[in-house]
Image 1 (tube, rainbow, N blue to C red):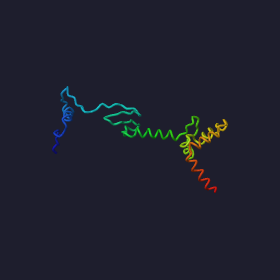
Image 2 (image 1 turned 45 degrees about the vertical axis):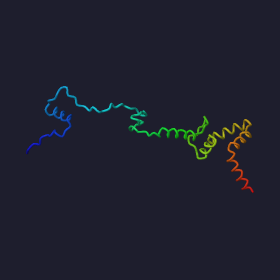
Image 3 (image 1 turned 90 degrees about the vertical axis):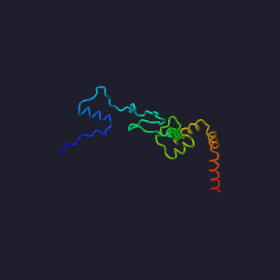
Image 4 (image 1 turned 45 degrees about the horizontal axis):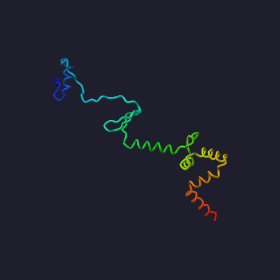
Length: 155
């Protein structure tokens, strides 16, 4: 059988030099074989955010993630909506809000427990009439609709 000869003519020049070094053991002592276009890689920690060529990247535990231009604005909107859906009381112990709590928070800013505590303090201070008038004036259009419905149902 004839032995096939290794054909180096189709190889990249740097690889040809490597093959010559391995097979023959002959090489120029000052020869350097490397990739010249390789960028220097920097080690990123989880949570790092950086900009590269106009693109914003964030390092996650599973790899880097490309962020869109709207993602930072959307995260601000999400944060704002989350703040609006939480009770404003500093001593609120509620961890999960019911649907009625969410409705109360959107209207008053307080969950049912904190609102009842607040209204109890107002009653004890003797300011209930003023508070009631203020709430009626604040939500006047809503209350007027309720009153007209109640009056029509009574008649």
